[in-house]
Length: 107
Picture (cartoon, helix red, strand yellow):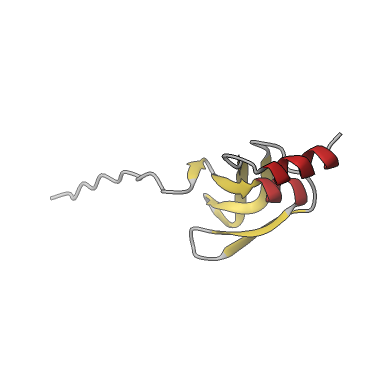
């Protein structure tokens, strides 16, 4: 007789797949968002994808990394994009000294 197999894709803990593209959230500290950062994202195959910013990153800004998504069907050497949404974690409270430094620095 015939063998019938039903395959269901399970959601991934970090990535969301949309076609050939991957979407992921990257948590940043306020310091990283203001001064820049140099981080790595572990890809599904275990390889590391470098993500670097030299300047200010806006809340929920999306960085697009070409060629770091899933292989395209029929063309495995071509890959989709990785969309990295930057989620900034703000401090819960500031000391009086920190508040004074911020007030002295920002207009």
